[in-house]
Figure 1 (cartoon, rainbow over the protein chains, first blue to last red):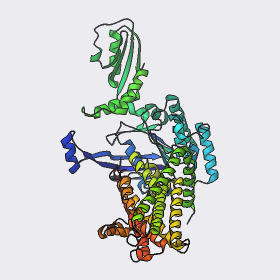
Figure 2 (cartoon, chains in turn orange, blue):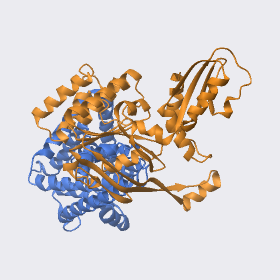
Figure 3 (cartoon, each protein chain N blue to C red):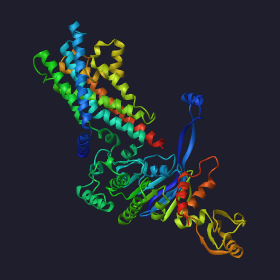
Figure 4 (cartoon, rainbow over the protein chains, first blue to last red):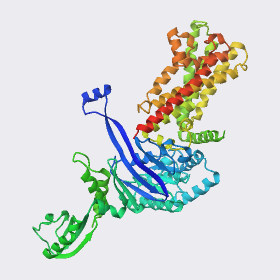
Length: 347
Length: 266
C-alpha cells in the first residue's frame, strides 16, 4: 500500500543576495536583490507502508526541505504530495496525530524539567488516553533503556541520553509515519548503533513507515534497504542500496600485496591509485576493465595476494556528488566528511 | 465544547509551577523589583499631589486607583502575555516553532498558553490592594458594585494587549530580530500610568484609538472609581468593541504570518 506519494514537488526560496563590502551592505538596506534557490526541484517518489527509506545528500541538498514539506511545515512552490491520504501542509489534526518528526539538532523537551514532564505534556497535547500512554511509555522506556534518566532535568543529560528521550517523546503517540532528520547527530558510535537498532525495531513492531536523513553513512546502510540520493534538489538515485554503487560508480577496487618492493611501475596508467606503499597498492579501476587489468598485474608484477572489492559506499556517493559539482563550490560536505572517516577503516 | 483546552492550560500551569523551583532566586529578585516599582509609582503620585489638589479632575485617591490598576495590568501582562510572546520570538528565531506547528492543536492557542509566570500574581495582588485602598479613601467603602464592570474592562484590556503582542510577535516572521520591540512596548505602556486626560488632545486621541492604551488602564480605573464622566463617552462599550476587534485582527494577521512562514522559511 502506497503511503507517501510525492509528485513533482518543488520548493523555491527567495534568498536576499549581496556582495561583500561596506557599500554593498549599505545598498542592500535600501534595495535588496534576490536570488531564486531551488531547494527541491521536481522531486517524485513514493513510499510503501512499512518501508524505511534513507535520504542521502550533502548539506543543502534539499533533504530537510523535503521532510518539512512532508510533515506539513512548508508549503511547496509547486507539485503535489499526499501522506496517508492527507495533504500535509493543511496540517489537519487528524494528520498530525499520525506522524512525527524528530530533528536531531533541535530539542522538543523542556530544558529545565525532567523528560517525564515533557512526556506528560506531549500526551495531553495529543490527547492520548491514559492507558495507551502508560503502555506506550513503559514500552519505550524499556526499549530505549532510559528509566534512570527520566527523572533528571533534561539540561543535565548527556547528548546520547537526551537524544533517546527525544526519540521517546516523538513516538509517544505511536506515529505511523516517522520523519527522522539526523537522529544520531553528535552521539557516539555505541549510542548510534543502539538508536539504529531501536529504529529498526520500532519499524518492525508497528509497521511504521520511516524516512531518515543522516550524516552517517552507517545509519543508512544499516537501516535502509532503499535509498534516495538527492543533490541540488534533484533525485540522483532511487533504489536498492546495493544497486547504488553499480549505478553511480561502475568501479572496482583492486588490492595488491607485492612480494617485494617495485620501483618505477606506472600504476596510474591503469586506474586511480588510492594508496601506494612499498609493498601494497590500492587501485580503483573501471568495472569493465577489471579482468584485463587484473590479468596484466598478475603477469607483470610479483603479486603475493590480489583481491577485488566494491568501493565503499561513502566514496561512491562522494564521487557522484563531486562530479556534479562545479569546481567553485564546496564539494558535498557531508558525503566527503563521511568518506574521510571511512577512509581510515579502508584495508 | 470539550474541556481539552482547559486541561491543556492547567497542565502547562502545573509544568510552569514546577519550573519555578529552577529559578527561585530570580523569582525573589523580581518580586523585590516589583515592589520597588510600585513604591516609585506611589512616590510620583505623592510628589505631584503635594503641590496640587487635582490634576484635570483627578485627585490623589483617583490616582492611587490608577496606579493600582496599572500595576495589576503590568503584572497580568507579565504572567502570560509577554512570556509566551518571548518564547514565540525565540522559537521563530531558532526554528523550534516547527514543533508547535506539528502539534494537533490550534497553533495560536498553543503558543499563547505555554509559559505562565505564576509569581507575577504578586503584582496583581499588590495592585489590587492599592486600587482598593484608593477607592476606600474616596468613598469610605470598597467598590463592590463597580467590581463586575471593572473585571470586564480589565479583561478587555488584557485582550487588547494580547492582540498587540500577537501582532508584534507575528512581525518576527518577516523581521527575525524584533526583541527590542519589548522595550518599545513597555516604554509606551508607561504612559498608561497617568490618566489619559492629562495628555494634550492629539496624544490623547492617539493613545485612545491608535494605540488603545486608554482602554487598558484609564478606562478600567475610571470604572472602579465609578466616575464615568472622566471617560470618553461610552468608554466601556468602546473598550469591548476594541478588544473584539483587536482579537480578530491579530488572529488574521497571525494566520497571514504563519502562511508566510511556512511558505518561506528554510
